[in-house]
Amino acid sequence: MNLSKLELELKILAQVSRNSKNMDKLLSRQITKEHFDSIEDGEKHSYTNALFKLIHNYWSASGGSLFTTFVLESKLNEKKVSEKVRAKIFSVWTEIQDLDIDENDFFELTSQLKEARCHQLLSGMLSDINEKYNDSGLDSTVKVIQDSLEAIQQEKNEIGADRHNFDVNESSDYFKSEFDKRVNHPELFRGIECGVSNIDTKTFGWLPGQIIVFLAPSSGGKSVMLLNSAMHANKNCGKKVLYMSFEMNSWLCLLRHISLSFEIPYSQLKDNNISPDELRVILDGLNSSKEGPYFEYDVNMEDPTPEYIDSRIRDLIATKGKPDLLVVDYIGNMTIRNPTGITKDWELQSKAISQLFIMAKRYNIPIITAQQINRETIRDSRKQKEANKFMSYDQAAASGGQNLMHLCTYAIAMEPNREEGYCVLHPVKMRDAWFHPFPIRMNPDYNKVEELSLQEQEQIMSMHAISKGGTVTTTSSIKDSGKTPIGSKNQDKESQIEEDDDEPVNIFVDEEIDVPDWVIIK
Image 1 (cartoon, helix red, strand yellow):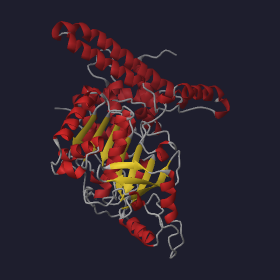
Image 2 (spheres, one colour):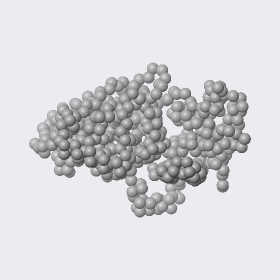
Image 3 (cartoon, one colour):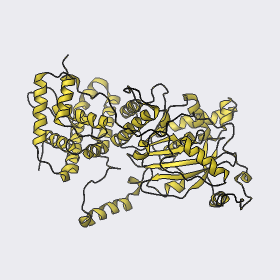
Image 4 (tube, one colour):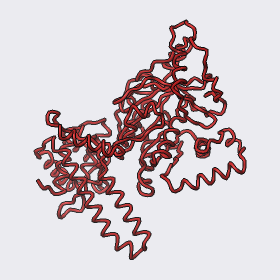
């Protein structure tokens, strides 16, 4: 059946207004308000666009509730919409509610909407080429072509998207097709690796739309782990990285980055104690990296919100291209804009996580972040350490509400041993993978994560494989290797936050629902 773009938009609005899960599916395919722009004959504005904004904003604010006629009437009354506009909106809404829909058509409908958007972008590019070439010359014209082609490619990018409906009993062709794709083009289905082989070999990498969180106590290496993962993605995987720092200033971020990149001790850089040769190596290395994918730091301690992150992603899309990986350092410092009423820190963080989750789906990128381990878990960990045992972590270990654990794909706890110079990684939540706890070295001289040999890993794990009150069965120690211990004075401290860990989870975001300016009476 060949549908017009207006018919496509109406059918999709009917689907998302009757099944709340369809909005999440819509966002995971990067469908936004820009896809709803049909204007009926004799009208100046798109009513499907206005309704999509209302439905989407209400879904986001209410934690996934359906948009109803009662809600529509309430929002229009709230905005004091004129009778003429109100009548038209209700007319389109009634048409949407009267449509017969089949849930199994949803994937095909959204595919056709994305295809229609590609045709619009291509048509717009062809129209703009002559105008830009005549007015601004070659460079501006090339930029129009590049931007349009990137937007079209983004529309057609389906990595990380899912086929939502299939019958297993009739899935042999589907399985064969998908299997052949993965065998012949594995690079298209592999996510972004973090550079730690014990994790990378157990997962598909960090895939678009996922949230990955590292849990650690204060000064436990969260920022170091995030930086190493991001640097590996940039240098080894060729990925564009946006690194949001909500606790360190620009100079410290750059020093830490340079220390890791060029293996120059962090303490020397902080003391401005580098030789002319080292300075030349740094400058030449930074200049040579201009040709590669960007690694963009954004430092903002005044507005650590999802709204700000979203604005930065949109800026990059318009200038350097969409980031392949977003790093948020760290979630414990985040809040939201314009909170309502008296809200505790953990509630603001919970709401911020909900918005980050939507952002990961909307832009189809993975997000890695970190959170502190709560006080009760730290106390238990100390008791286990005194008994010479490793801690066993569960999903209640994270500070704040449990919304983070609910929405993330992977949660990995970091248990540092500063005296011995290593950190044990524990799986806390692994949706499609699992690994046994294992140690890594955290080298504070270069802010570097280093993998240990299998023998070193077994040595460390065996040191703690004893019963309570027993004695260590081996005299070997990681100190024997001569490596710098994790607890040296060069390691940056991370701020300790106070949490009320026993508060209930509340992810309802009570915020004002947007209505396009043109529907509001001036």
